[in-house]
Image (tube, rainbow, N blue to C red; front, side):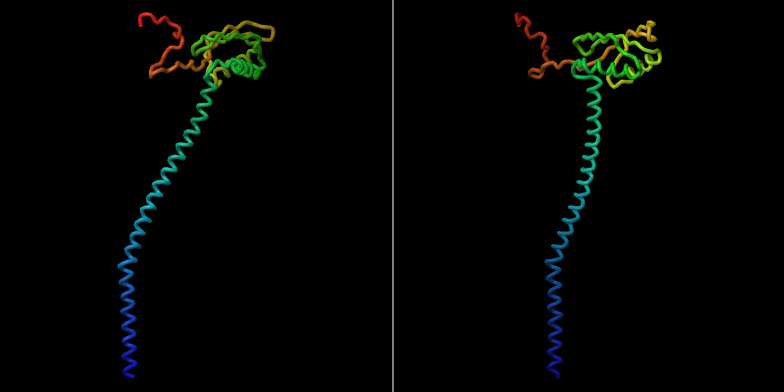
Length: 192
């Protein structure tokens, strides 16, 4: 019986020794790897926070650019790249017809630079004329009223207007970093 008690004590001691060895092995090899992995995970989490902030910033910038895109499109309507005479006439007729007025004549003079002069008459009621002028002032297209003359007409009143509208100037060609005037292409080269 003493022998079996001694054997059981030896087995318990060996179990304790094996358990201690396992803990020591874990402490020396698994715990450092765990700590390294935990530090890496913390770094990745911090990087994710920074990346999320960047994504939010990019999304906000995209929204701003999308909003600016519609502003640029509105500016292209307000000041077109060319004379755009058909749309100019339609815009004036659209405003006129909204108030029961009409444009019997229109003359457009292109100054060749950034402005065009539009001379036209409009006939209709006095109330319609007032609303036409107000809409002309508030239209997205840029109109500058230069002169106005009122005369009585059979249908109420006739206004003769002269307005100025704008277009983007023709682009000058660029050569070697300097702008060149394309109108002087055939200039005399003597003295150069």
